[in-house]
Length: 123
Image (cartoon, rainbow, N blue to C red):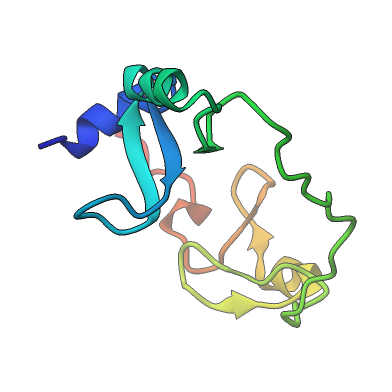
């Protein structure tokens, strides 16, 4: 029995390959994971190259179209909405937020409900 962890490291190193095999006695046709030695033996016995479905690092990879600019389908406000960290009021424009603030003791804008609005009492 093969564990998934074994496949996870053996498949990218090409130690295991995916072969598309026809119906053989007792099995159904399909894609089977086989060791690289088994694929070489298949080639040796049949005289044909092993029917590899996918082998890491070989063949042309699917080319993906690089998307250009994509417009957002969700309607967004023109200004980022935000809320005051102190009183939790929500503002949808920078002007609303600026009108909400008052000048603190050191001249910086601050929420009117903030305890840091006033200078600390001397000890």
